Every structure is written in C-alpha cells, then in structure tokens.
Image (cartoon, rainbow, N blue to C red; front, side):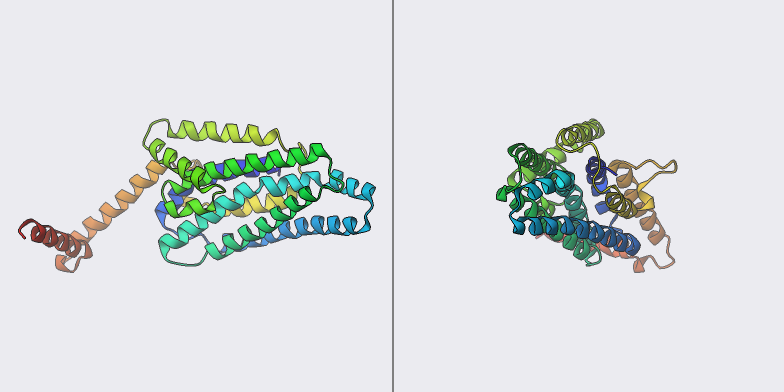
Length: 292
C-alpha cells in the first residue's frame, strides 16, 4: 500500500470520526492489539533505516552516505507523510476514551503517536545534518513536511469541531482551531459531504506531488491500514457496506433514546423509571427558579 492511500484513509477516518465519538462505543481490543502490532513492526523497520544512516555517517564516506539517501528517500517520505494517519487515530482514540471515561485505546494510540514523533525528529535531524543529502532532496522533504503539517491541522480540526480538547493533536494550535471552527459551521450545511470529498481530492493530489510513485514499505503500510479499518465498527456501515453520514448516526441515537424513554414509561412502576425521575427533577428545578 502506498503512503498516499494512508492519507486518504486518514481523511475518511477524520470525516467519520465524529460519528465514532457520538456512538460512545469502545474500539474492540482486537483492533487495538492489531494496530499496536502493525505500527510497531513498521516503526522497527524505520529505526533500522535510521540506524544504517548512523553507521554510514560514522564512516565519513560521502559516497556511501549519498547512496543511503538515494536508497531510502522513499522511506523518509513515508515517515513524514504517514504522520497524518497516526495523529488522526490518536485524536479519535483519545476522544473515545475521554467520552467513555476509560483508558482502553488512548494509551496505545498515544504511544504509537510519540514513537512516530521520534522517527520524524530523526528524519529532520538527518536533513539538518546534510551529509550526503543533496539540496533538491532536502527541499523536497521540507516541502513534504510542510504539506503534511497543514493537512494534519485540517483533519484534526474537522474532528475537533465536536471535541475542542482534540486540537492538541494538531501541529499549529491556532490553525487547527480555525479549521475546527470552519468545520463546525460547515457541518450543518447541505454541502458538508461535498466539502469532504473535495478536501480528500485536494489532499491526495497534494501528497502525490511530493512523494515517490513506488511504495517503499507496502506490506508494513498495508498492515497499519488493515488495523485502522478494524477500528471502524460494523455499526458505522449501512446494509450495503457504505459508511453512514453523521446525521444518520444522530438520527439513530435519537431513536434509541426515544425507544428507551417509551420503554421506561411503559414499566409497571413508572416512578422507578430513571427518565421520569430526571424529568421530575428538572421540572422541580425550573419551578423553583421561576417562583423564587
């Protein structure tokens, strides 16, 4: 799997992330374990690549260092570009755990996020070191880094529109909050889905310009993508396999609440119903404020 496809998956996940937060259902332990295993496998491959750079650099042989850059340029691009998916998954995992009051998913997603940051920092140090790195390669990677950071803020901002605490997973806090505000305003318009499609298309085209056409670690990327797909529960899809919209999830949530309320009102002892007790409490509070 190519890293551009991972960014597309991140866009899909960010679009349906609010629905995952709305349902308040935990991610399956199998999906979390698979995500940990696949991500650690890819991180190990990245660290092996960077370890080769340190060994070559210690020799002081410029030709060998130049060969390292030529052979591993694609891996460095994947380290930078795939951070989009890592941050989106970390944001959704944190949001789900905080809404459910648990720590089942966020410790894993946060650990992978921090490990990815370490790998990215090592790439940036290699760029700054410049030994064996041509000017064109350094400029190419720096442009990819800037493109990645901007799209991270866009996708994390779209999730943060429904949970302001998640803005900390963006690169630039001000920019992420701005995108969150725009996403919040756009969520109630009929063009919301069209905007999401155009955003995904623009992001795909933007990344394709800055990465190699051939995938460097296709099997490792495929493993991560499969584990992320496992996180998307079956209730996020309709009967024909299409992902439901956020409005559909909201309607289903309201229907479930209505069914629960009707069932409680039909109980033999209506006074034992939690809904009735809550209604009476709110009613008493309103009357107390009105007649005080």
